[in-house]
Amino acid sequence: MSESPTVSFRPSEASGEILFRAASAPIIAIVDTSFQYAHDDTGAAAANPAAEVPSPVNATVPADLALSHVDLAIRPGETVMLCGQSGCGKTTVTRLINGLIPNFFHGPLTGTQTICGLGGAGDTTGGANAANVTAPVPIETLVPLVGSVFQNPKTQYFNADTTSELAFPCENVGMPSAEIRA
Picture 1 (cartoon, helix red, strand yellow):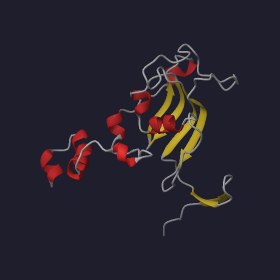
Picture 2 (cartoon, rainbow, N blue to C red):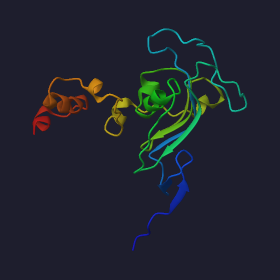
Picture 3 (cartoon, rainbow, N blue to C red):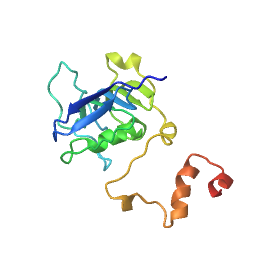
Picture 4 (cartoon, rainbow, N blue to C red):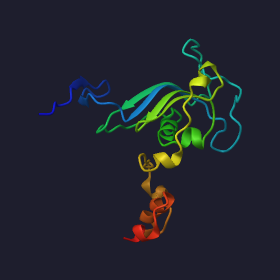
Protein backbone atom coordinates (compact mmCIF):
# COMPACT_ATOMS: atom_id res chain seq x y z
CA MET A 1 0.00 0.00 0.00
CA SER A 2 1.52 3.32 -1.06
CA GLU A 3 1.57 6.27 1.25
CA SER A 4 -0.44 9.33 0.16
CA PRO A 5 1.45 12.63 0.00
CA THR A 6 1.34 15.01 2.93
CA VAL A 7 -0.90 17.96 2.19
CA SER A 8 -1.40 21.32 3.77
CA PHE A 9 -4.11 23.89 3.55
CA ARG A 10 -3.54 27.59 4.01
CA PRO A 11 -5.65 30.66 3.41
CA SER A 12 -4.65 32.73 0.40
CA GLU A 13 -3.49 36.15 1.49
CA ALA A 14 -4.98 37.72 -1.65
CA SER A 15 -8.50 36.32 -1.69
CA GLY A 16 -9.17 34.34 1.47
CA GLU A 17 -9.55 31.11 -0.54
CA ILE A 18 -8.16 27.86 0.78
CA LEU A 19 -5.22 26.62 -1.27
CA PHE A 20 -4.25 22.96 -1.49
CA ARG A 21 -0.55 22.25 -1.61
CA ALA A 22 0.84 18.75 -1.96
CA ALA A 23 4.13 18.16 -0.20
CA SER A 24 6.17 17.50 -3.33
CA ALA A 25 9.30 18.98 -4.82
CA PRO A 26 8.77 22.13 -6.87
CA ILE A 27 8.88 21.72 -10.64
CA ILE A 28 10.03 25.36 -10.80
CA ALA A 29 12.21 26.80 -8.04
CA ILE A 30 13.59 30.31 -8.22
CA VAL A 31 15.55 31.26 -5.10
CA ASP A 32 16.99 34.69 -4.24
CA THR A 33 17.22 35.57 -7.93
CA SER A 34 18.13 39.02 -9.21
CA PHE A 35 18.54 40.08 -12.84
CA GLN A 36 19.33 43.23 -14.76
CA TYR A 37 18.99 43.40 -18.55
CA ALA A 38 22.23 44.27 -20.32
CA HIS A 39 20.05 45.98 -22.98
CA ASP A 40 16.39 46.89 -23.04
CA ASP A 41 13.97 45.36 -25.56
CA THR A 42 14.85 48.02 -28.14
CA GLY A 43 18.54 47.10 -28.08
CA ALA A 44 19.59 50.33 -26.39
CA ALA A 45 22.11 50.06 -23.58
CA ALA A 46 20.73 49.64 -20.07
CA ALA A 47 20.54 52.84 -18.02
CA ASN A 48 23.42 51.73 -15.79
CA PRO A 49 25.27 48.77 -17.39
CA ALA A 50 28.00 48.79 -14.72
CA ALA A 51 25.54 48.52 -11.81
CA GLU A 52 25.98 45.58 -9.47
CA VAL A 53 23.15 43.25 -8.60
CA PRO A 54 22.53 44.17 -4.96
CA SER A 55 23.49 41.71 -2.26
CA PRO A 56 21.03 40.88 0.55
CA VAL A 57 23.12 43.16 2.79
CA ASN A 58 22.73 46.12 0.43
CA ALA A 59 19.12 47.28 0.65
CA THR A 60 19.29 49.75 -2.23
CA VAL A 61 17.88 48.47 -5.51
CA PRO A 62 18.92 50.10 -8.80
CA ALA A 63 15.91 51.43 -10.72
CA ASP A 64 16.84 49.33 -13.77
CA LEU A 65 17.00 46.00 -11.91
CA ALA A 66 14.32 43.80 -13.52
CA LEU A 67 14.18 41.24 -10.66
CA SER A 68 15.39 41.78 -7.12
CA HIS A 69 15.82 38.76 -4.81
CA VAL A 70 12.80 36.87 -6.15
CA ASP A 71 11.70 33.57 -4.59
CA LEU A 72 9.14 31.38 -6.36
CA ALA A 73 8.21 27.70 -6.01
CA ILE A 74 5.66 26.01 -8.27
CA ARG A 75 4.75 22.40 -7.55
CA PRO A 76 3.29 19.85 -9.97
CA GLY A 77 -0.43 20.38 -10.49
CA GLU A 78 -0.45 24.00 -9.37
CA THR A 79 -1.90 26.74 -11.54
CA VAL A 80 -0.11 30.05 -11.13
CA MET A 81 -0.99 33.48 -12.46
CA LEU A 82 1.60 36.23 -12.52
CA CYS A 83 -0.11 39.58 -12.19
CA GLY A 84 0.97 43.08 -11.34
CA GLN A 85 1.64 46.53 -12.66
CA SER A 86 3.42 47.16 -15.93
CA GLY A 87 7.17 46.80 -15.45
CA CYS A 88 7.00 44.74 -12.24
CA GLY A 89 8.86 41.72 -13.70
CA LYS A 90 6.15 39.31 -14.92
CA THR A 91 7.66 38.91 -18.39
CA THR A 92 11.17 38.69 -16.93
CA VAL A 93 10.11 35.78 -14.68
CA THR A 94 8.60 33.93 -17.67
CA ARG A 95 11.76 34.57 -19.69
CA LEU A 96 13.79 33.08 -16.84
CA ILE A 97 11.53 30.00 -16.67
CA ASN A 98 11.53 29.31 -20.41
CA GLY A 99 15.30 29.79 -20.76
CA LEU A 100 15.33 33.06 -22.70
CA ILE A 101 17.25 34.46 -19.71
CA PRO A 102 20.25 33.97 -19.77
CA ASN A 103 20.43 32.29 -23.22
CA PHE A 104 18.97 35.18 -25.26
CA PHE A 105 18.51 38.12 -22.89
CA HIS A 106 21.84 38.75 -21.19
CA GLY A 107 22.80 40.61 -18.05
CA PRO A 108 23.89 40.10 -14.44
CA LEU A 109 21.99 37.13 -12.95
CA THR A 110 22.32 35.81 -9.41
CA GLY A 111 20.46 33.22 -7.35
CA THR A 112 19.33 29.68 -8.05
CA GLN A 113 16.94 28.70 -10.83
CA THR A 114 15.81 25.08 -11.21
CA ILE A 115 13.30 24.30 -13.96
CA CYS A 116 12.00 20.71 -14.27
CA GLY A 117 15.01 19.52 -12.28
CA LEU A 118 17.48 21.31 -14.57
CA GLY A 119 19.71 24.24 -13.68
CA GLY A 120 21.10 25.45 -10.41
CA ALA A 121 23.10 28.37 -9.11
CA GLY A 122 23.70 31.27 -11.45
CA ASP A 123 26.04 34.22 -11.00
CA THR A 124 27.04 36.12 -14.11
CA THR A 125 28.25 39.15 -12.13
CA GLY A 126 31.76 37.80 -11.57
CA GLY A 127 31.14 38.02 -7.83
CA ALA A 128 32.20 35.71 -5.01
CA ASN A 129 29.70 33.02 -6.05
CA ALA A 130 30.91 32.87 -9.67
CA ALA A 131 32.95 29.73 -8.97
CA ASN A 132 29.80 27.83 -7.95
CA VAL A 133 27.82 28.63 -11.10
CA THR A 134 25.91 25.97 -13.01
CA ALA A 135 26.02 26.45 -16.80
CA PRO A 136 22.76 27.79 -18.25
CA VAL A 137 20.33 25.12 -19.42
CA PRO A 138 20.24 25.20 -23.25
CA ILE A 139 16.89 26.37 -24.64
CA GLU A 140 16.57 23.22 -26.76
CA THR A 141 16.56 21.18 -23.53
CA LEU A 142 13.70 23.26 -22.09
CA VAL A 143 11.55 23.37 -25.27
CA PRO A 144 9.78 20.04 -24.66
CA LEU A 145 9.27 20.91 -20.97
CA VAL A 146 8.28 24.59 -20.78
CA GLY A 147 5.97 26.75 -22.89
CA SER A 148 4.55 30.23 -22.73
CA VAL A 149 1.10 31.45 -23.74
CA PHE A 150 0.94 35.10 -24.69
CA GLN A 151 -1.72 37.42 -23.31
CA ASN A 152 -3.25 37.62 -26.80
CA PRO A 153 -2.96 34.15 -28.39
CA LYS A 154 -3.49 35.61 -31.89
CA THR A 155 -0.07 37.26 -31.66
CA GLN A 156 1.48 33.86 -30.99
CA TYR A 157 0.84 32.28 -34.40
CA PHE A 158 3.72 31.86 -36.86
CA ASN A 159 1.82 30.23 -39.75
CA ALA A 160 -1.37 30.90 -41.68
CA ASP A 161 -2.85 27.39 -41.36
CA THR A 162 -3.30 24.97 -38.45
CA THR A 163 -1.33 22.09 -39.99
CA SER A 164 1.78 24.24 -40.46
CA GLU A 165 1.37 25.73 -36.99
CA LEU A 166 1.28 22.25 -35.40
CA ALA A 167 4.28 21.08 -37.47
CA PHE A 168 6.40 24.12 -36.50
CA PRO A 169 7.48 22.99 -32.98
CA CYS A 170 8.09 19.45 -34.22
CA GLU A 171 10.42 20.79 -36.92
CA ASN A 172 12.23 22.93 -34.32
CA VAL A 173 13.14 19.91 -32.22
CA GLY A 174 14.36 17.98 -35.28
CA MET A 175 11.53 15.46 -35.57
CA PRO A 176 11.68 13.54 -38.90
CA SER A 177 9.21 14.79 -41.55
CA ALA A 178 7.56 11.35 -41.87
CA GLU A 179 6.85 11.29 -38.15
CA ILE A 180 5.40 14.82 -38.26
CA ARG A 181 2.99 13.87 -41.06
CA ALA A 182 1.90 10.65 -39.29
